[in-house]
Length: 107
Length: 118
Image 1: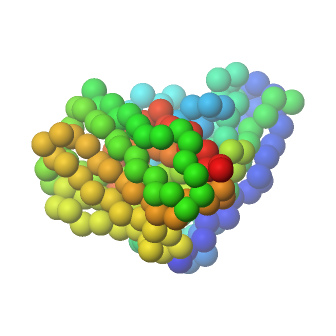
Image 2: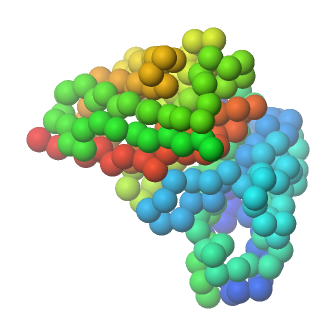
């Protein structure tokens, strides 16, 4: 089974900061990776699919990159509503696998 | 607009079987390429994928839970049912169902918290 490793597990940042979260797959997964945002007490929301495609309605400050084993989610200018936990998900093969999450907190 | 909602017991006893229903609207599970998945999240922990059913009745399960899970669909009722046998306190979690198309879960239901306790 493919393992997904996210880093960091948490980070503190200020409004306006550029934030980068990484996800590494234990084997190549082409670009079969999505990024999800989860706010406390809420269901996850799809931000990025196919590694770099922005889901409709998601602000353009979110971007994704990478292919193969290394992937990045970038928030170009952190906004107050972006404080949340972010998860990557590989769907290259079964079993589907989430990363362990990255919590973005206010500095 | 696609919506999904999970329903089922909030409390189950150890060794019992959990049955959760996902009732959805805004799409049909008879449409090619469409699926519905189940994902859970123990309190304060990460998301874990459980199972997936596709429009053609193809079913996929997490290997670690496969022996305990069954996923079925009722296209006429717009429902997907997940059963999990032999529940244990470690299965306490919020259980989500989600619409899947082109490999991505979007949107998700609101989730339902299931507590396993005697």
